[in-house]
Amino acid sequence: MKNNLLKITMVATLAAGFMISCTKKLDLTPTNGITANQVFSTKQGYIEAAAKVYGSFALTGNQGPAGSGDIQGIDEGTSDFFRLYWNAQELSTDEAVVAWGDPGLQDFHLMNWTANNPMLQGLYYRSFYQITLCNNFINQASDANLAARGITGTNADNIRSFRTEARFLRAYQYSVLMDLFGNPPFATEKDAIGSFLPKQIKRADLFNYVESELKACDSSLPAPKANQYGRADKAAAEALLARIYLNAQVYTGTARYTDAITYASKVINEGYSLMPDYRWLMRADNNLNTNEFIFTINYDGLKTQNYGGSTFLCHGSLGGSMNAGDYGLDAAWAGMRTTKSLVNLFPDPNGNADQRAEFYTSGQNLEINSLTTFTDGYAVQKFINKTRPTTPNVLTSGNNGSNPTFADVDIPLFRLPEMYLIYAEAVLRGGTGGSVSQALTYINQLRTRAYGGSTAGNIGTADLTLDFILAERSRELYWEGFRRTDLIRYGKFTTSAYLWPWKGGVPTGTSVGNYRNLYPLPSSDVSSNTNLTQNPGY
Image (cartoon, rainbow, N blue to C red; front, side, top):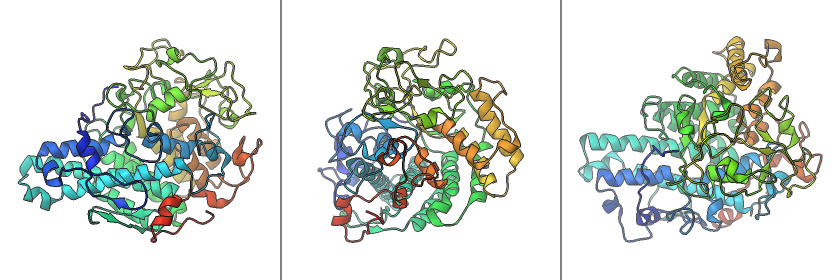
């Protein structure tokens, strides 16, 4: 869809000037002749720098889909943030398998990754690259720098707004590192420009930092829906607070379920509502879903071209007898499918009852005999490069996106149903400030939509259990980057309490060491930074 965030017109020299060296030290030294005082001498310079901060979520480099990648040591098409994040969060679970043999990719589902896994290294360095961009912008947008450059009044206020948004984006990336890697190195805008070895931060301390940053942002960000589509507002900060509070016991050892209820409720009461049809959510015109979407990564087939993000999800989930043209695309990459564990959460795989079951079954086997055979495992047709269906119940109806090679589908990092589910789970886990009756109402709103407006799928109080919530989260949020975190919170990611096909490299599934609840820090970083201690087990 149209990218209403910003016109990403950042010149390549600026984009290359403030980079993270993706091995060893964090290198914040400009690599070209342009100085900060030149780049940040005007309001427009700051806007272009902010465009790069946001654009780094949806772009992989400075020359379109390939040619000058941000992250070294990994294929540029693979280096998109959400593609790397999705691999780590979904391929390691019951929700997804992949046929490709890219180095390190099969390690996720087999659960045998090491500190040398290139996909994990790519994600780690992508997150730090984006943190570095944020740190640099925050530093350059300080009140002292604005005053020294003669930027005052409304222009200065606009730049301060971008500065707060950069703080939110940095907090988001640190929340990713906290969740996946636990105890990463840590740097802020206060660290000196140039090469240095960041010190390690403990997971609980990083939680406290992210929490404090988000609360500070919440007081300064624009009101919900008052910012441009794709830019952060108060609801985005509150949604991330609700998310980290739900997982606080994992991160810190101390439960924060009451806070999860408080912040989920804040978002719920800020004017968001469910879109009428679940099947509209991940389409080429999903920029129209602003009632439900809280914060998005914006992709545009003409303006933000890369082989990650929704392009990866749209192309990569097609194969077998699926016709790419039916999905608004020019090629099927024959990659990702799902396991029967996800399929069996639904009453039928074809969405006749629960419309969230967007599976393709023709020519596909439910059982997976080979992870590398696309037709083993049902395909998922959730991300489609077409507009909303023009024929009811025909997923592939609708108009094509703007480009058959690069998808127009935006990725919601936060949407309203997650807040409903956080509220319900936190209530069941003993948080105060909410009620079981309200939790039931929220869950049944999701299920009424899922059943096409019918209450046939609604549940009663006796059905509302923690296990039900875990299953409902999967039904609602599958393939959106949540599953690993959810299974860890429930104690089911590594243990024998829950097995799925090929978990741990065994066809029927097996448990693995609990140390795999955290990913390893890249061996290249640990060996070059004497301040870092590797996570246990690696």
